Amino acid sequence: MWTTAPVRVDSSGKTLRVLTAPSTDFWRVTHYGFIRDNGHFLPQTVQGDFLAEIEVRGAYRGQYDQAGLMLRLDETVWLKCGVEYVEGRQHLSAVVTNGHSDWSVTPLASFPASFRLRLQRRGQTVEVQAALSEDGQVFSAFQMLRLAWLPLPDTVQVGPMCASPDGQGFEVTFSGFRVSALE
Image 1 (cartoon, helix red, strand yellow):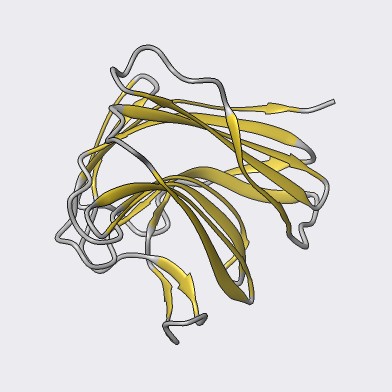
Image 2: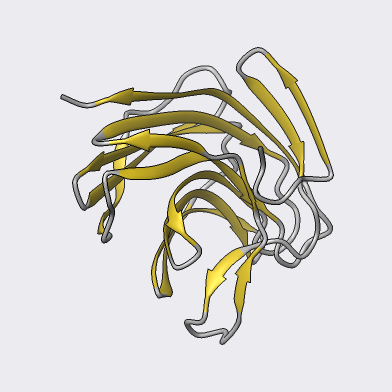
C-alpha cells in the first residue's frame, strides 16, 4: 500500500505506471525550512543486508519532479535516490535524511529514456548505483552515485518512490523491482 496514494496507478506484472499528485515530496528542514512527508512510496519490509533494483522511465516536466527508490526507517531517517528534474535538466539525485535532509545531484548531459538503480544496504551503510539508457534497451555500466551512513535497525522499508513538489504531476513507469538478500 502506498504511503500517499498517487492520482493513478496501473499495474501489470512487474510494471507500475503512476501519475503523481502535485505538491508531494519527501524533505526535512535543511535550507528550505519546511518538512514534507507526503510523497508516493510503495514500501516493502526487508530485514538484514539486501540489494534492491528497479528500472524507471519518467516524463519529467515540473521543477523537482522525481522518481526512483527509497529506503526508509521512519519520517526522520530515510534515503531517496533517482532522477530529479531541476531547472530544465534531469539530474541523478540522492537525498539522505537523518533528522535533516541533504541533497546531492549530478546533471545529466541528455535526457535518458530510462535508468536503473541499485541500492545496496550493508549494516548502516547504503550504496546507490545508477545506469542510464538513451534508447531504453542498452544501459551503461552501473556507477556509484552515493555512499551514505544511516542509523538503521535490522528491519527497514524499501520500494519505488516518486513525487512532484512544484509541478502538476507527471507519469512515471517502474519495472523489474526486486529485492534480494546479501550474504
